[in-house]
Image (tube, rainbow, N blue to C red; front, side, top):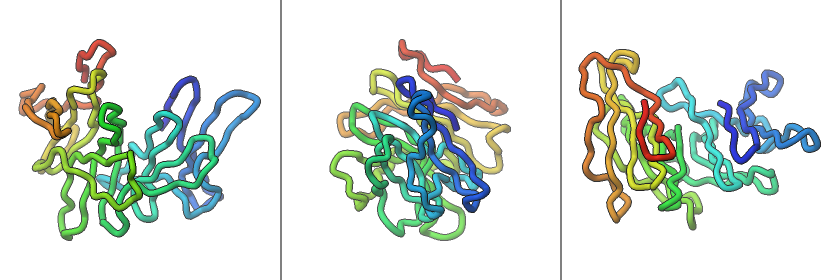
Length: 218
């Protein structure tokens, strides 16, 4: 997990000497060197368990890092300069896991994959929105898209009007058959006009990305 944001490099660093935790780090320049963003405590571990494989553990935007904490699987926010401790964005004891977040700047929220384990048995996957303004960790995420067994890679278009994502269901694995879909945001922030971009029943498509001109690539 490597990110370059405004000339600053961010990454996750596995540390066997610290009980194997993943530490969110940054490098600005030779003078500042490498800095830890999350606390120097083995209980802080920037790791998600969505789909059990993990991945998509953090995102950085506008001076803050948003990450999944391994111990409780809640989403947290923390200033990238380390001047404050992480604070939660999702409710305690919700039995939900979060991953692959992107910032929806038009609506001041994160859009991410949410995996709900509260019902027992097979977890329920969906695409959800987590507010950033006035969020003290007690607001339930808003489900934007659901109904399939798995979701990944939600990506907001440059103009903030559309969302692309990947979905698939049992018995397929993501290398067997997936569908890339696009929908528009309504005035209420929910999705409308869902449509499939790929149609083949034997295609495995992934990694949707928008160009600066708003062209979708995958």
